[in-house]
Length: 446
Image (cartoon, rainbow, N blue to C red; front, side):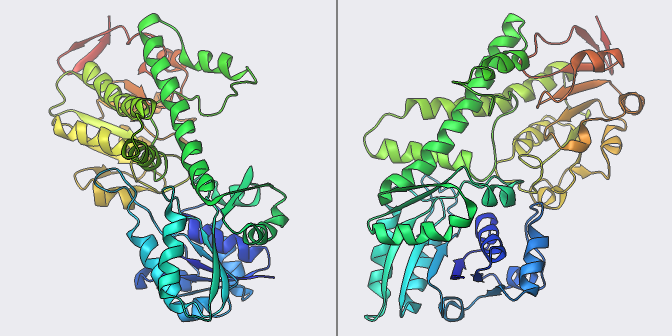
């Protein structure tokens, strides 16, 4: 058993704290937001993450997990202190490290014994050195510490499973013994442990996310070409993915990546490269293609509906991906704002993200079901591929809609199946636009 302190209770911090406590460790999580702290103390999770709240309640009942706003309490017996605070995107594209600096300062001010400080937040290369300097400036003369970089690779929606079955554990430090000690904490997970220097570990996180984002942008560019040449990008991706040198992952064409990691990390890496005198042209292309995927999707809706003014547009899915309520950099926001700017009325439904979306999109009418969204709609847009959207009753939906148009941003549906049910379908990279003519309020096949 190890005494652990986790500073910050966002997706990474809460998952880290809860899961390490489930492995039998004693964990204290520090959260300075009082409203959030009270929610956590009541056994409730402030985020939607499958399986997390159940683990939180169980380990709180067992006495292995607690929450406090007090660094003195949180760090009292901690051998390992994880920094898991947010590093949001700054105005210039650089990561905003104000929360990291504040956490390091508070840790230094309350550090009176030996401890290992672990950077788990996604931070620019060189942050570990900065954290070490800040802690050293404020720590007691009796304190000793080492800083280890341990970047997280948790996917929202499957964070608990990713924690317990990681592909690898990356640890970086100037103190190899400290890195090994943190490695021992992860031994029960049975993962490959990679120990590097501090800056290399920080870079592994950015390089990994940028590469995955590049795969997404690549297949979206291929999808655009497929539409022009009459090929089906889903079959193209299937053929590519069968090559073991390529593999099938992150080859789903659609409306681009979103969320709290890929947009922020690609931009931050681009900023690091540019300010270091490099020319990150591939990273720039990845970001440009990602934005154009959303723009092309909006263009399809405009092509099918003509003038958006007065039209009713239904949106299925709001979160940036399924199994999360996270709306950060969600493609739905750009798409909906474009519909509203054109004069359309927007109705939407998402299984868990509507409360968060309502704060960002107050003009949207939020519905109870996908079928409510379809009522009197001129077009239905599939934006997030939640499971409950996979087997909708299309005859029922067709009867509800004013115009039978479906624009599929995730290639979730079979074009032939929807066409057989009287719907006009347009996906991403699945051939040319539907053969139709727009006549006043009615859309008919040509």
